[in-house]
Image (cartoon, rainbow, N blue to C red):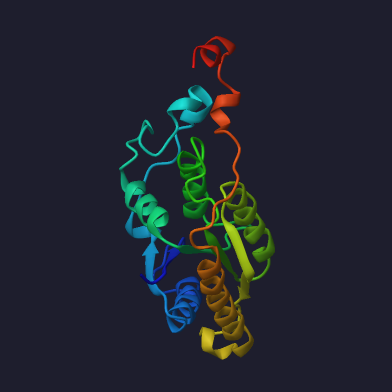
Length: 216
């Protein structure tokens, strides 16, 4: 069975520069033999994280979220969990990831709090800026996703500044970066598939009252 690569577009636009860059990475993955899928967050709206983890950490999980979890986030979570590798792509708004990407990362707490459900899953990260802030946006995705168990593919960080550039194909260096990221993502997924990794106890257990922990 072949590998499946999911691309998550956190732009408000489905035909913008971020989507175009994401499509190039996915096309490179297809040429390496993977099947691909692009998921536009704008088509799957979901409410912001309600912070249930802070109230009752044990009830923050994929099946116990107070918001469903199968609201609009459910489709997104289902596709991320079933993918062999994921490409996360965001535009840069005021030196940061988009609000949709930030909301996704917060809701993904339910996918790591009771066990790292994406442990060892390869990822690539894309950021598109008008001017500055691409490196900040990449870091804002890299740190939480790494703590969730995702593994960055070699040269899997791709950023673009598109001021003065009409279309992606006007920048051959960026096209090459996208190709390498997509191919390396598939190569890493092939090598890590079926591997087992160590993980800590679910974080909510460390916060459980002593009486509850003693009774488990």
